[in-house]
Length: 335
Image (tube, rainbow, N blue to C red):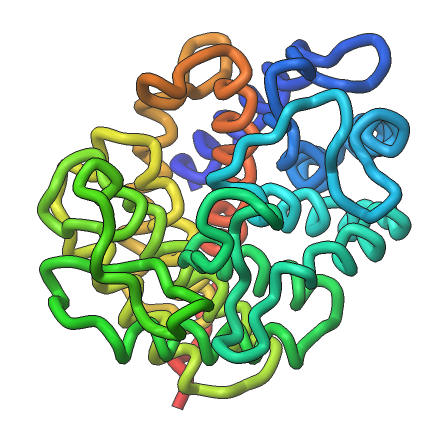
């Protein structure tokens, strides 16, 4: 209980820091830098700050929401996480009952959907490598599909994760996490200077350690929605990859999503291995939080705007792990 109280206090300090960054018009931080506030409706709703979610969504409605349902406007958009950021905002908008933003945004998000693989292309149309589908994007789009009640599309995303796992040639040493809609195959060849955008080296440093945990988090939610045990088995597999990766993953904030996966796996299985990893992530949040309540990313993503992004995300993860660890009696492992 003492630990849970520390996690709750940490979450509240993070929320308070975010509230202190609000602008008078309801927006937050430097809106001319990027879409760094895409997680804030989600974070504010789970923190009981409904009024601030409403005000931010109203600002987005007038300043960052296009007629076609895309989130474009005064804030410039990056490319690498385009569909992911849209999906996160839609998820929070739906939680906050901002149905115009959620439903129109989701209709637009479906333009990224690949009906053959079941994945979602992560880049906006007409830019970069439009055929690329990666684990973080498909996981969040799948979670958003669940939030929107679109079970069929969420199941397609679940099938995508099975395809990606079955195609892996070098487990447990590395996890290739990009699928090509063009070739309908796992991407194994890429420019050497972009290796981090395609593969997670389990024993490397500064990898995209988000992949295993966010995959597990989506697959557990899909299991909860459908009762299909294969999704839970696959969630375990992705989470195991993350938990068996290098200790150096705790040197970067991207370790955060491994706690997302472990929290939800503990919630549905009650297994100590997931509880212990969840507690470890909770202690990581305590150890890396600044005195004023915020968290930060690593260079080159360590500017003020990214502090808002990371703090909003860590508050969300703390909320999830607090919920999982608060169970009076863990659930019995599924048969």
